[in-house]
Amino acid sequence: MPWVVLIFMMQGALCSEWSVWMPQRIPAVRGSCVLIPCRFEIPDEYKSDLTSSPSAIWRRGSMNGPYIFNSADHKTFTQGTLEGDLLQKNCTTKLQDFTGVNDTYFFRLEGPNPLKYNFNPGVQIIQTDTPPGPKLFPEMVLVPEGKEVVLSCSAPAPCPSLPPSLSWSIGGREQHSMNTPADGLLTLTSTLTFTASPSHHGSGVSCSVQYPLTTGGTTEKVQSSMTISVSEMKNKDIRSCSTLGLYILCGVMMSLCLLSLPLVVFTFRSLSRRLTQVELLLTNTNSIYTSLKMSSMSSDYDQLQAPRSSASVESPYENRVVQETRRGRPAP
Image 1 (cartoon, rainbow, N blue to C red):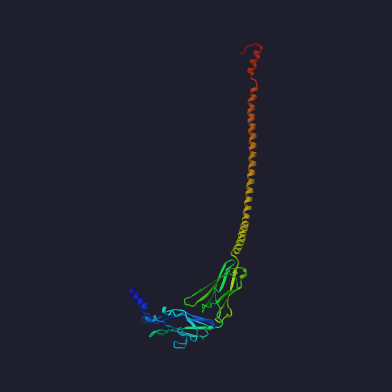
Image 2 (image 1 turned 180 degrees about the horizontal axis):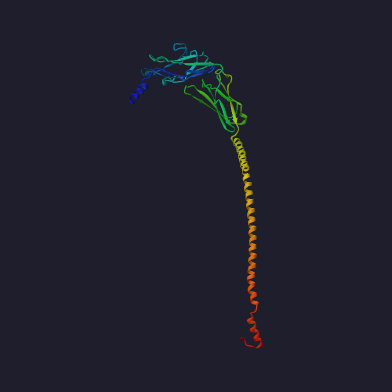
């Protein structure tokens, strides 16, 4: 099965047909040039005839309509130049000072017989005296103060040799570039970079476009606008949140203090009662101790005095011996 798919893809790549690629629609400014991006493809059997000098022809209205441009004839209705190389299958054409009508234009390739073919589809060219306004991106900006803002403004450039000019209503760093989107139409883009400030809040930012003309002068300016909203700096919000948090914390602490106050009073009173009881207990203990001490001292004193009294009383026997001795009698 994979080989079948591969063979089918190779057949599609090798077997070329009559085909053309170009934008479906091109906006043009009256009095300026128009560049038509164009590429084509031819069958393989005609590629050998493309080595000669073919010519590019543009018809208006239909594939059989009147000629407006022929690269081999400079006396055509519209002046222009073939920008691409037909030998490389590039049919890009620039029509100078285009003042034609809004219509569809078809490409025709003419070479030595039998290389002649009218390609379909064509390209629709829409002219206007006042070009459309440029495209702004983003359409609205919400950014904090001090943040860098990047805005872009783009406008089509149908005539690369006379590109449009883009300008901004506020100052900043500008950068311009020419881009080619997928449709092949050139676009000029201007990028503006600036720092958001309170002065930008609620103010409109506009981008203007202006096209130069082939004969000199320019078109009127056309602008597109957007609104910028600038919020306060984040650190201010943080300070506000911190202040609010501090108030909440203080409220919680105050509530805890009020709730704990009865417990403190109760604890203080209970402690006071216990101290009073201890004090009374100590007083009673001292009194008992003093009484016991006095009683003990009196008893000890009495015990010590009793032997002394008995020692001082003379024994009758001893007195008699003494007396007898004093008288000269021997003791019995």
